[in-house]
Every structure is written in C-alpha cells, then in structure tokens.
Length: 401
Image (cartoon, rainbow, N blue to C red; front, side, top):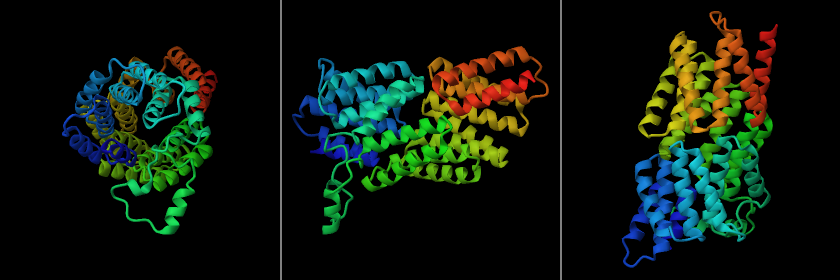
C-alpha cells in the first residue's frame, strides 16, 4: 500500500512525502525483497529530482543489489529507471541509455506499468540529449498515440491523494469520464515534444503542446510537470522575440521549483533567466544569475547543468564587455558537452561561439570560422535543429560575401 502511495506522491511531485513513505515502509518487519527494491528505487528517483545524488546513489545501489538476479519485472524496471536517471544527471549519458534500454527490454511484450513509464520517459530524454532524435521521437509518438500508459495507476484517482478533499458527485462523474490522455506519461511526452519542436524553430506548434501539458498536469496534480512545461514555454517566448515575457515566466518557474525543492530545475531556470536578461539589456544581472547557477550546479555535481549555466554566463559576460572571460566560459561549456556526448547542447554552444567570432572586429581567422560554421551546419542538420541551422547558414553566407 505504501509503495503505491509513494508512486502517487512521486507523480504529484511531492518528493518529501515519497521519502517519508519509503522510510516508514522499510521500517516494517519482513518486507518482501522486491517490494523493498521498488521502494528504494522510487526513493532514488525522488532524490534525483531533488538533486541529492549521493543519497540517490545509496538508494539505487541497494535496489540493484536486490534485483541483480532478475531479468524482468516492475522492481527491476524501476531500479533501472533510477540508475539510468542518476547516470543522466551525473553526465554519463551513454551509460544512462544502456541502463534505460535494459529497463525497457525488461518489460517485454507486456502492457506498460508505472515503472515502465519512468523508464521510457527517461530514455526519451536521454536519447534526445545524445542526439538520437529518431529514437526519442519514437518513444514520444508511442506515448502520445497510446494516450499515455495503459496502466491504471499511472495517474491515480484523486480520491487516493493524501491531500485531496472529498469529491462532490459531479466531480466523481467527471473522474469516471476522465480523458485517457490525462496521465503523467502523456503530459511528460508532450513536454519533450514541445522542446523538440521549439528547438526546431516551430515555436507555435511547440506552444500548443506545452500549453496542453500544463493544463493536463494541473488537472491530474502533477506539480513537477507544470514548472517543467512552463520552463520550455519561457524558452519559446525567448525564441519568439518576447524576452520580457520569457523573463517573467522564468522567474515564476524558479519560484515554483524552489518551493518543490527541484534543485536541478532551479539551475535550468536560472540559466534561462540569464539568457532573457541578456536580451532585455540587464547584462550585469544576467551574469550574476548565471554565475549563481554555475555554482549551484557544481555544488550539486550536475555537469550538464553546469555546462548549460556556464554557456549562459559566457554569453552574459560578452555583453558586459568581458569578451575574453565570456569566450573562455563558452569554450569550456562546448568542451564539456562534447566530452559528455550531449550533442544537442554541443551544437548550440558551437553556434554561440561562431556568432561571437562573426560579430567580433578583432577576429580575422576566417578559415577557422568557416570550418566551425560547417561543423555547426552538419551537426544541426543531423540533429534537426532547423532554426540553429538557418542561423549558421546565414552566417556562412555573410562570411562569403
């Protein structure tokens, strides 16, 4: 029972409650080993969301020890989801993919379970970060086509929410007629699809999916998904040339993430806020916010988040006039993304460096710039980053002229 309640709390984004439920359940005598593994893995996933990777590692290690002889089953799936997520946050994207693919394989031809949803959404994000857009989109399309998971516990009934109040008759009728797309797996897939479309330059289409994800996530009480969708919504506002609107939304995301103690999301929101402030002319504040994000990400041992924040810091410093330090941060971020295999972010950081070089009066090495732009064009073509590819092609054309 407490295992199911922990699952409910995790879908609500109430990770403190997850940890309390797990702690209480594990104190009971004679806990079944598979139940224990499920509880440990669920706690590890919550700790990952909170940015507490050391504690997450301890939980995941115990779950692995309890499932190492298994070849299938929900306990194994959730354990691999936790281990994969932990490796993702540590920057080991390739190992994360190996673990998550093993978790996906462990499900076999059976119907999706609550654990398999954790696996597949994590795998989609990992594949996309690695630049395997096709694999990521296959998972997203399957999740959307199925209306999310076929399991009944992916979005538990409101009556099982600990914080829920008694429902009136009309609310119960609405509950019975609930849209099958009102599931955590569905809205999570919508958020990733919104991100993909956004980074392809299809801002209006992306906004449609992200707005729908926010509405559905609010309806089912998925509090963690709401600020995540709004984060990408803010990115869309920036891409559409509305930095003031994007800055306001980024600040709201930061506040929501702070309230839920979603520390990795706070780092991302700070980096985004810095980018919006650069566009609104608040260069000094942009650099300050980005620097704070770098320190936060480094303290939490989140190398991908640190590199994203460092890129934001580099761009902000350039606008303050400190071009030398700005370039240094951008180059450090690019090297980190390349080493981690984070192809999407690597391509975008190389483009930022190319834009910096093309706008500098002091940069005279046109051969190096042409080579970098060709690399960016090739990468963005492969990764389907259509908007970034258009920028790179435009810079190349200007350089030829």
